[in-house]
Amino acid sequence: MNVCERDFFIQLYELMEKPKLFVDLGKNLTRYFHRNDYRNIAVYGVGKLGKLILRNIDVTQLESVCTVDENKESRFENIETVTIKELVAREKLDLVLVTPLLDYPQIEAQICSMREIPVISAKELMCDMIDQSLFPDCGN
Image (tube, rainbow, N blue to C red):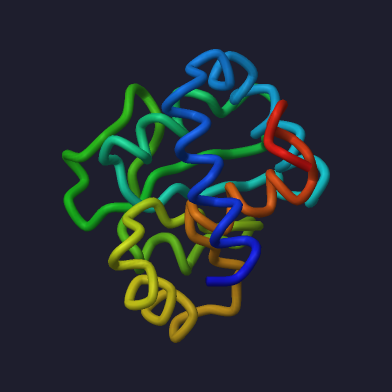
């Protein structure tokens, strides 16, 4: 297990023990996206983790946010849902954030086989946020 993986699991335990860390999640996600110049975001998956992230993205601070699902009925509030084919056809797209952790390798491969675009997992997002000290009390 590398340092990032270890920190990831430590952070998960800390989040469970300290729900107050979620208070600034939206502000910190926005800071992360801005620091990395991600203005057009697609969130793949509208399960529990996807909804947690979507609830905390300040869409007014980004140019566009959509969700990706083959079932267009899987919606989150009034955020547009697109299929993978529609996603890769979008001109403006800076990042695809994949929330199904177990299926990430297959989803990443599928998207990257159709278009060159940054694709990260929710785990990578959290590791990056830890590395950038965007979570308070994360042990850095």
